[in-house]
Image (tube, rainbow, N blue to C red; front, side, top):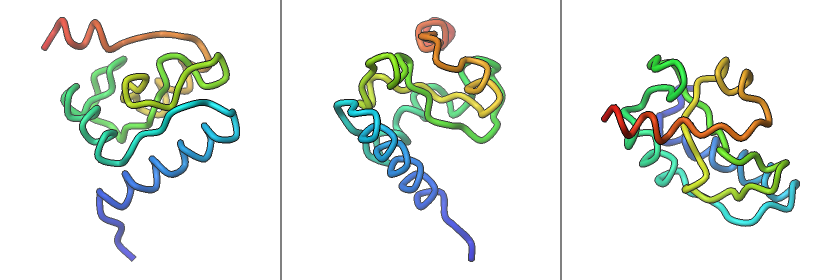
Length: 99
C-alpha cells in the first residue's frame, strides 16, 4: 500500500493530538495547518536546514506546559528533534530572518 503525502500528514497530526490529550495540553492542529507550517519555512529542518523528512516539534514542549496549537510548532528532522529534547528552543525566528 502506497501512502500519499496528505495521508502521512493526517496521521502525524492525529498522533500529535493523541499525545497532547494524554498530556492534557490545550489546543490542536490539522494536517493542513501542519502543511502550512512546513511550507512557511521552505519544508526544511529549521535547525540543520536539510530537506529530510520532517517531524512535528513543539517549541514549548507539551511536558513544559506548551500548547498543541499550530503557532507552537516548528518543523525539525528526527535527529534534530531528538537533540532538542524537552528544551524550549525556537528556531523559527532565525529561519524567518534568513527568508
